[in-house]
Structures are given as C-alpha cells and as structure tokens.
Amino acid sequence: MGIIFDKPLIGVTMCQIDKGGHPTQTVHNKYLDAVLVSGGVPLALPHHLMHAPHLLENAMTILDGVLLTGSPSNIEPWQYGEEGKELHSDPGRDRLAFSLITHAMGKKMPLFGICRGMQELVVANGGALYRQISQHRQFQRHHEDDSQPLDQQYASAHTVTVEPDGLLSNLLDSTTLTVNSLHQQGIRELGPQLRIEARAPDGLIEAVSLQHHPFALAVQWHPEWQAESSATSRQLFDGFIQAAIRYHKEKRT
Ligand SMILES: N[C@@H](CCC(=O)NCCCC(=O)O)C(=O)O
Image (cartoon, rainbow, N blue to C red; front, side):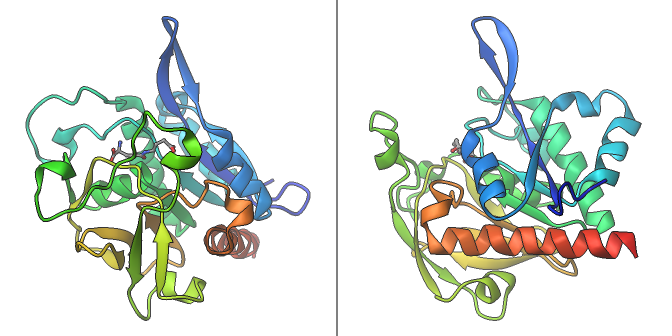
C-alpha cells in the first residue's frame, strides 16, 4: 500500500461545518487538486479517525505524507494556554490535527501545513497565537475582504522575505515572494523545535519548519490557490510530494 500507481498517498485534514443542520465534513477541492498536480494521491481524513486509537495509527501506516489544510475555524485558545471562548471552533479538527502532527513527527513523515495548518504545527509544538492580529497595531492587515469575489480574496496581498539556509529557501528560486493573506490569527510564540522560514514586512512570522525533520514545512499563505499556474506554489507542493516519495521508499527498505 502507500504508493497507488506509483504515487504517494497524502492524508488531507477535513473540517466540520453545519450544512442545513447536518454535521458535515469538508475539504476544498483546491487542496486535493494541488496534491494531484504535484504527483500525489490525496486521501481526505475525517475526524472519525479519532474515535479509537488504532484507527489513526492504521491510517498512518499507509500514508506517505500529511497535508494540514486551511480553515475559517480557529484553534481553541485553551490549547495554547489562553482563557476565553472561541466562537469559530472545530474541536474535532484540533484533535485530529494535533494527533496527526504527533504521529508524523514521530515517524518523520512529511508534513505540509497551510494557514490554520501552520497554526496547528506551532501550537502542537508549544507555541502560541495572536487571537486577533488586527488588535495589535504593529501589524498590517492580514485578512481578506470576504465581500469580494474569491479571485480578489486570494489575490496577492503582501510580500514575505525568506530566511536564508532554510527548507523554504532550498525549495524556491527567490528570497522575496508576493503572497495572498486570509487569516485573522498569527504566530505570537514559536515553540522550541520550530525554525522561522519567512516573515512579512511587519515582522509577522509567515512560514516555519520543524528542526531535525526531513520535511515539516508550514506557511501562513495559500499556495494551494491556483497552484497549477504559480511556479512558486508548485515548487512548494512538488517539494512536499518529492519528500513523500522519499519517505515511502525509506519505509519499504
Ligand atoms: N482561522 C484561522 C486560519 C485561517 C485559514 O486557514 N483560512 C483559510 C480559509 C479557507 C481556505 O482557503 O481554506 C485564522 O483566521 O487565522
């Protein structure tokens, strides 16, 4: 198992939403498309994998990589030591993501986090978040205008500067990128095992990686948006899928 038709199998996190009263788990096609375009096979992971310990463990044995998707929901603040209620929570997603991260770290399985996915990697490693960036005057605006059409919401919003000698700088040709920006929250504290990979002009951390891991990268922007037509986004997904292929080969030897 693992490689289906010579392609690595990538677990993709789902989100829980309410659809006309029905609890429903979803994943945007753009995440599945980006995995496929770079040569992986996506497998959507429901929160039900947390219903019994062996379910997730069994899934991890067949996977070659994990993609932590973005989501409008926020990580519950108690997870990083803060008090107060979270109106846009998805506790099942929190539990699934944190458990996937723990397993992927233990197995050194490739991991790629996007937006909420980056925040999950940070919180899982003992870091903490700004719960509302706009309340901190040192930061520029980092969220979209949701009254606008999607192509404007996901349009380029600001630059990021890539740190030298990191995982991200190895994957990309350029040290300055223009990225989209659709998040209300951001990294306040990093967590001991993480490395800063890129920052916005206002200093906000925009990408991180896990030290002593072959490929655990996470970005605050959305490279999955029209990944096929963006050379930079393709480089990120190609790097992730190539790492998953290497992981699969090492798993078999
Ligand atoms: N809720 C968090 C994370 C933001 C995020 O992941 N947005 C994704 C939007 C939907 C998508 O494109 O997948 C925050 O606001 O910081």
